[in-house]
Image (cartoon, rainbow, N blue to C red; front, side, top):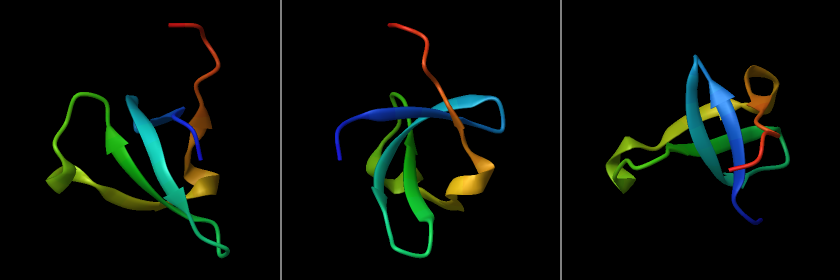
Length: 51
């Protein structure tokens, strides 16, 4: 999975991986690996604006 940017609770994250049940490991942009969150894909908003 390439760097897919999403919005979760108003903050920008990158999806690290997604499993078959729809749960994703996300990491806030510019955060360390110990800040990984586990959320369901339905809670995320795709960030399609260009960087």
